[in-house]
Image (tube, rainbow, N blue to C red; front, top):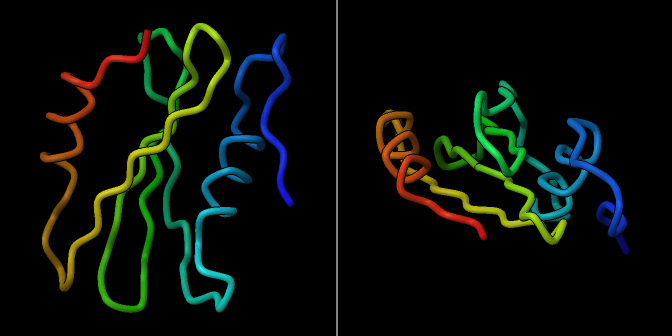
Length: 96
């Protein structure tokens, strides 16, 4: 089991990382290599760079106004750079 923020708490980095790690396979092999707060945006969110056994991934975790959490992850096989794609997705991704 894992928990997420209650109905009156803003998302923190510790909670965001716990939620992202809870979506990793239980067999391990996934490493978070960088974490960035997404600046100047409401709802609050964080972006995670990850290393998976078969390539890299980036995940965006956002908290909506109703305190629900939304996780979007894109993975690639090999060494392709996901940052431009994730930046474009984030600019158009809306959480009400």
